[in-house]
Length: 289
Image (cartoon, rainbow, N blue to C red; front, side, top):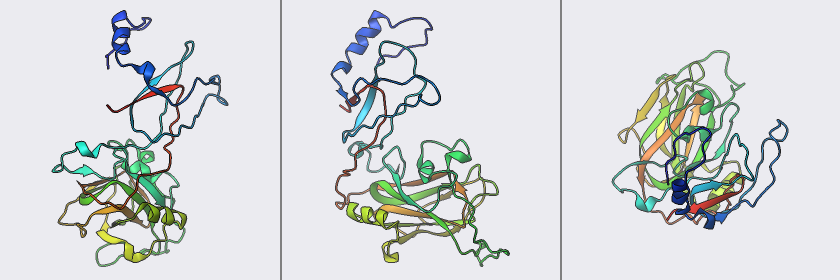
C-alpha cells in the first residue's frame, strides 16, 4: 500500500497513481453500488447502507463522484482473526472484539454497552465501558459478608461468546474511571454451547439451567478505578469453554474485560449464518490474500 504524506492542495503524483493501480482495486468486489448521497444537513447527513457478506475483508476502497467531502466513514462488522496463523504457545485475548468476541446477552446497558469492555486498547472514559443503571432494590442499610462483599439482593450480568473456544488462564477486570459507581464484587462463569443452544438461549433471554455454567472466577471484591489481574492459580476452571457470563453486584461500571488464554479445538460450533452488517459508500473490498 503506497504511503502518502499530507500535501494540501496537491493531487496524487503519477508515481502514486501507478502504485495504486498495482493493487488492482478496480477488480475488487463491489458491496455497495453507486448510490446517491444526501446533503450534509443535520436531518440528512447520515447515510446508512446494509451489506450482506459472509467473506472476510482486509481493505476497503471508497469512491466519490465527482468530488467533494465526506465527514466520516464507518464500516461495521465482526472481527475474524486468522487463528491458523497464531502461535499455539502464545496466549490471546479470547474475548476481544477485534478477534471476533461479542456480547450475546445482558441484563442492563443503561449507560454503556457490554461490548465496550472488550474493545481495543484502554478505555478513554466511563462512556467507553459497560455501565448499568442503579438498582432500585438496594436495602436501606448495607451489610457485608465475612469477605467484605455487600449483601444485596440483585446483580447485573453480560454473556460473551469467545472469539475461539479455549482455556482461560488470565483475567483482567479494569474499573478505571469508575469512582463511586464501580461494582462491589463480581464473578465469572464459563460453559460450552453449540450455535443452536446459543440461539435458543438468546430467545429465552439467557435463562440457562444453572448446571451448564461452571465457576471460572469466584465472587471477588473489586476496587474503584483499578485494574484487577487474576492468574491461573486463582481461576477455578481449566476446561475448554465457548461462552463466559460476567456478573457484577449490585450494579455499576467496568472499563475493560480481558480473558487471556489459549485457543483449543472444539468441533461443536457450525459456521455463523447470520450476515454481518457493514455500512459504507460505494466501496470495493479486497479479501485477505
